[in-house]
Length: 382
Image (tube, rainbow, N blue to C red; front, top):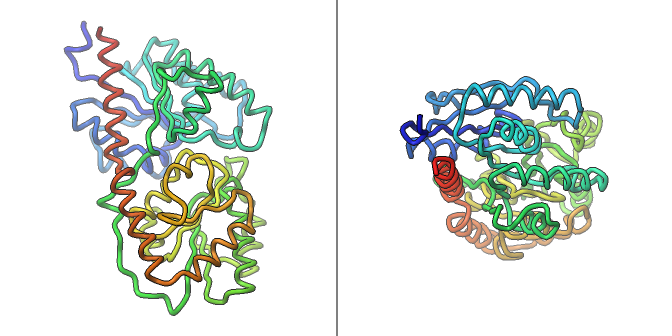
């Protein structure tokens, strides 16, 4: 029977339910609003509560997806698991998010003859630290680009890198401004001054590649010079990520009393509003959502001038940029921020909010996926 006589079914596949909850709900929402059936496949974690918001979405658990490294036996098992899952679900189109779904889900989709889209949410550890892995990933993505209908990148620099390296054709790829932010949920809030303290907050997973070690070292140096500065870390360890901070080092930072560690927060708005400045000295990004959230709330930002961050804002306008992997550069930016008058900080925050309204609205990002769903499912019918 011809597919067009039925509601089209879109499958979203990710390496964690956390990823679905934090980044993909606007995509689910817009697809449902436009009459698509939406199905999700991801390893189940406690963020499965997203289904309370979308009870019509069926969620399938993935049991063979191990985020930590590549392993030939496990990864072949994952391809088979996804192959049988896709054959059972029979979606009209699959959106894959993050590397392992992009790669092994791409193979499974190819074998089941279902069109699929790979979404590169950032090039990750392999493209930052390990040249051998980088070369391997380039070759893998050359193959992925051939068996996928389309590749989506979360910044223009990553897209152009893949095009220039001849990994993907320009016509076969597109870029969005990250996953976007809910500009009605993340709004500026008035907070009473915190007894003269100027609070700098790192919010995110505790990964060395996010620049957390540079954040702590800069905090250590600044506190020797400036007693009004207060440094906070909000986030959790990620044991499956090779760049994760160790328990031993985290305990050392806490015992040293350089930073205040507040653990994981599912809703970061209170931490952003309680901050004078949100800091992300990352090495590379897709496009950091926490920075979009901070800008949407009118909170000033200090971040690295790297891929995924550069195109978000202008130096000394909405944000302050620093050199990556350089605690000294970060220290200088923090001290410069402390020396700003209140009006200048407020203006930076207002410009950030304006930029978020113009560029980072998650409805714009979600509409890109809606367009892809419409175009690619029509191609299947045609």
